[in-house]
Length: 122
Image (tube, rainbow, N blue to C red; front, side, top):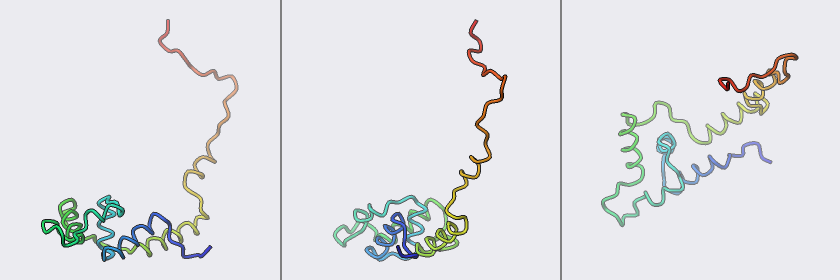
């Protein structure tokens, strides 16, 4: 297995960037807006529908409408995001934070303590 493999959820964004000729900033804006890259085909203007904006301008317009700014403050490419995530996983050894919390929890009952049930039943 190659070391620099891109996860499937990010690979879809890379494919959409290439297919629809989007920049890294447009992809990041679309991700922050919660857009689905599989739905870009119906949003893209194929010069057949003159009332539609081209996809990059459409994404910019939605981003400005929601966040009130033209583009993100820091633009990170999908490949760089995948590299950072892989480095973070390698640093922690692939463990998630929930495993650390669960190991400290005691599951044993204290002897002599009876659980209280049926409060208010008289």
